[in-house]
Image (cartoon, rainbow, N blue to C red; front, side, top):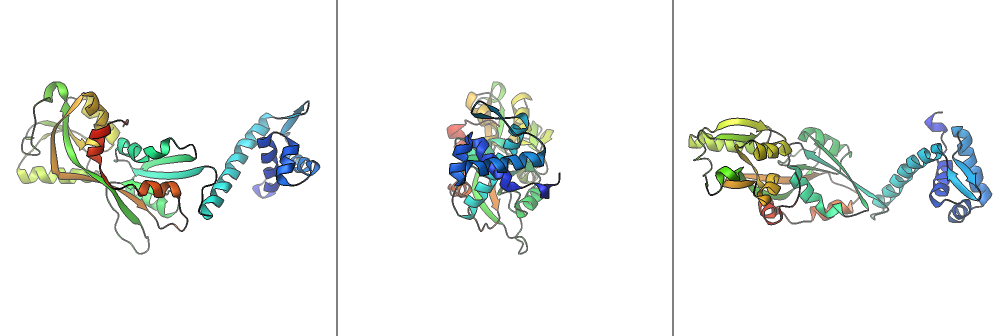
Amino acid sequence: MQLEQLNFHHLFYFWRVATLGHLTRAAEELHTSQSAVSAQVRQLEDRLDEALFTREGRRLVLTDTGQLVLAYAQNIFGLGQEMLGRLQGRSAGVTRLRVGAVATLSRNYQENWLRPLLADPAVVLTLESGLLEGLVERLVQHQLDVVLATETVPADPDRPLHCRLLGSQSISLVGPASRWQGRPLRIPEDLDGLEIALPGPRHALRGQFDGLCASAGVAPRLRAEVDDMAMLRLIARDSGWLTVLPEVVVQDELRTGALVIVGRSDALQERFYAITTPHRHRIEVLERLMAQAPTSASASASASASAAA
């Protein structure tokens, strides 16, 4: 059977019967007769060459095939309702928000930003990570609704994009409490020769840090360079080395006292951006997130320190 042979009108009638569980109620909702609804469902069964319902007394019970077809029908018509709601500027049923984040972005920061949506049963999140250029390309093709990044993208009249600053924070030097409690260090002056783990070369703040050390004539002993912030968190927690990273990455370990802040540098700043395309149709949940005032991520992390990396 080819897709063009599938009658979506028949599928819609089946969806309503399966959802409501009764021919009569489906006929009332659809403003037609019970026999007409039954005929539509029967034609779908004929086309699929599969029974979708069995009768148990007066009850209609879905067959295994019927359960499978219902799952697809719910997705098909649920997305249709969502599309109409977005086109009409209102929410209708479930809203999907498709979020891309650069692979070097802290998972803690992502969760903190999305936290207002986590308790909303009407929102389904799709989360992707990758390189900035690839994510932006998917954004332009309307396969993503927003991209979270630590840098802006160049202006391009052929590819209009909006970059909104969500917040910023100073970069911290952290170490195991057992060794570094009460032993503050200056960044970069006191780092010469010390074992250290750093964000990888692709991370926006790595170039800042290397330049700061070079200007001061300081050469820490590099033990690891890590692109993924979740992995850098584990290195900071388990290696015993000093680690330079955004404080939000290790907010749980700071809260429990496993790690302590050994130093901070206002000369090193990580900024967080939301990149979007001009939308003709509003995405209400995204607009609510974007309307949050830019905040200091380090202040937020110190105050709450409640999300996992």
